[in-house]
Length: 188
Image (cartoon, rainbow, N blue to C red):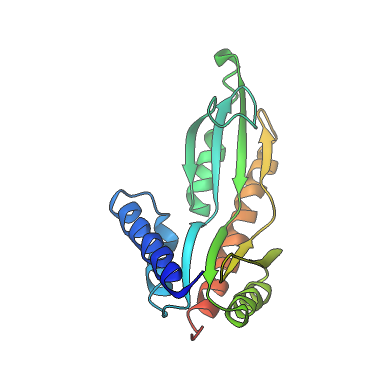
């Protein structure tokens, strides 16, 4: 992006974050980090994020988002145990019910390749399985940091299997904290 293009894209992303914060659409456990990180300077800004969660979903098919409904959801590993403890198979609804582990993901725009590489380095140090960047046109780099892909467990399922999703969510939260700590030391 040209300088003016970069500033416009950054301003739009930060305005969108503010709007989503006001509407309660930003994950509460990552919101403070997002605001602080976006004040690092004009060389980076976040474009989207999810802090990771476990959700109980019902629908016709795991690939049909529009035909599915979230019954319960939590970003908190302790609440996760309550949710999976109550998860039942409502087969009377005529559809499928599953518990979905949705890992953390963070998208960041970096103005230079050097900054993009430092973000990826933070992700690797924090233990994230997927981290990389690609060139944005006309300038800048799009960085994605994520944990492993989603896991879907169909109900009914053994309780220990469902609880293991909460354990994985706890591990994701630890990695996310390490990533946040490293990124907040990033200087432009």
